[in-house]
Image 1 (tube, one colour):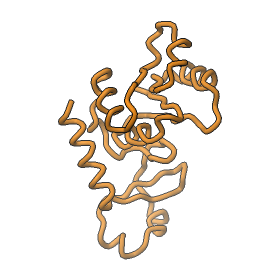
Image 2: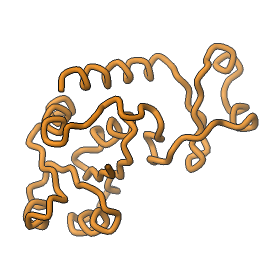
Image 3: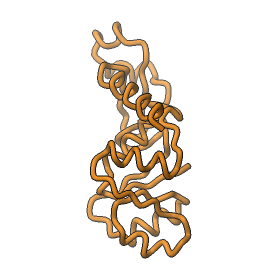
Image 4: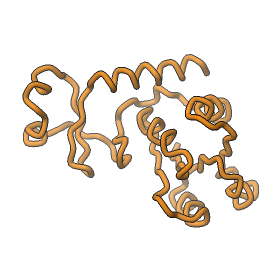
Length: 153
């Protein structure tokens, strides 16, 4: 499942990436029509709080409209409407650019502070951002949040 979040749902889009979903996030300043056309071209489901997308959709099923205000409400509503698996493939995609992570090379790992390299076992490399990420306390908290959302379905 390929997804597309508009600017209202940037945080939700990053959580969807954390869960492993291929999720585009609209760039700042894009019009609704540009977003809709890009989603159509890339065969992505648009997730939005903007009712204008429903008018453009005309029953094609390309738009999932959410009424929730916060991330928690949107997660609950999206889970009900699309039965997402929040543990689909956690931390397989870059939260910044959506690229699939790769195994870091030795030269890429040299970007990581030595103390972190000695303490951490799990590393991810984004070839698009040219950054190495590692399993830290924030990742563990995010993983726990994904588990909670999956259990609440």
